[in-house]
Length: 414
Image 1: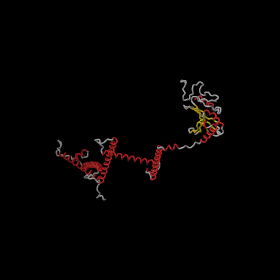
Image 2: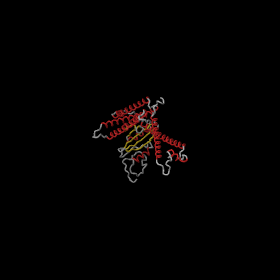
Image 3: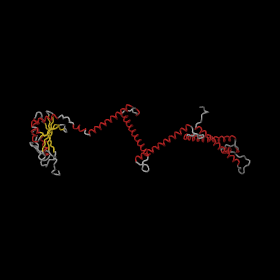
Image 4: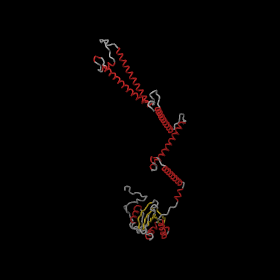
């Protein structure tokens, strides 16, 4: 497009209008100054001066004030020209400053409102900007109104207040539903974000945070596996609660590795003394599955000697002996070991609490000496056959046996 046919922009029009106004204002001021000078020239002269003396013009007064008139008060042609040039320069400067200020203000106003200088008709660009600004303001207002409505709906849902008259309004119901839907969407988005974050942490997402198809498939497979595991656990718990676990508990346990040894001991003793010499026999699962025999007190010394001397048994070492008070009875516990056969055996001998007595095994195992004395001292169990049965921890004049459950302290101050 040529320079002649190109239409001026709103800024150029505003600038031109400002310059025109500034020039007009400058011309008006010059004219007012000339009129003021003419009126002063027509006024009567001061008394004592020649009536015919010529009166100075505005230019002459200005020149006289600046000391640029010729001698005798008559202005020279050069001073007159300089004065006019100075006045014209000042007027131009003032007009230029005013025009610049006006153009700047007009340009800013035109940019803000999208209006042109002439006639106030908006240009296409300014019109588009104005429309965009209006649309943005409208959107902001709509968003603010929607936020206010959502807040009101949330408050109404929390407090359960109805509209005036006690009946809930349709608008409040719709707002409550919208709020619920928004919460559901937010929860779904949060769950999705969490899944994506977990996938990113395991290194199964692509760069930039977007999960690949492979990672998505893996995540789905992992979720399905977790769901299956949870379902299986729930089914197992339900089956156990319904009695399915009882069948498992009633299933016979596998025999102990020491069961063959226990069977051998029972057979050898029963063959020698008869089955009635043993009250019971079992594998003690609470004590490393040691084979355990319960022998009657009146036959105990005979059985003990057989345990030591029989070649298939040969329990030559007594590792432990102690007594126990069970309220209704007392027991003496023995633990034997065979270095030859590398086997262990436990024996229990029961006795009453009124006059507890168990045959001493000190003649068979000398290590039973102090153990039987300690059991006698603290529990009061007698060991007939012991060569030196007396207290070992307490004094001989001590009253009672401290480890018995019916023990009462004789001297309260002790």
